[in-house]
Amino acid sequence: MRSLLRPTPPAAVPLQIPEVTVEPLATLAAAADGAWALLLADGCSYKAEGDVSDVLWWTIKTVRFEAGELDGYDPTIRRLDRDATII
Image 1: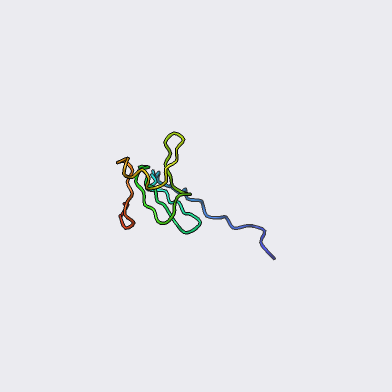
Image 2: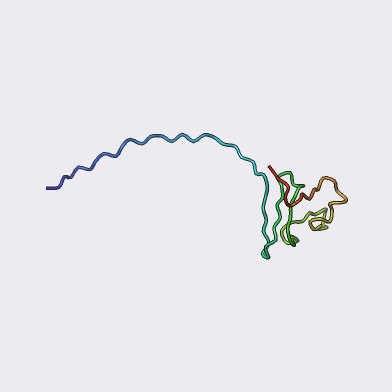
């Protein structure tokens, strides 16, 4: 004869998850042709490989500037070497 009683599951132990604050280091944007751009959290430093005109640009009022166009004019915009560490 089978028992009609079900075993009692073990008591649940509350899971304590510590509060964690995170801040993004960078945003990675990939183009369809394999090109990529990495924009650091400061919004001004970037790395790029290939033609990134469809994934990275700056605008001033209604004028769009491709990556590299403002580098010599605005000292806050910095293109980093491909091998430069970001952390």
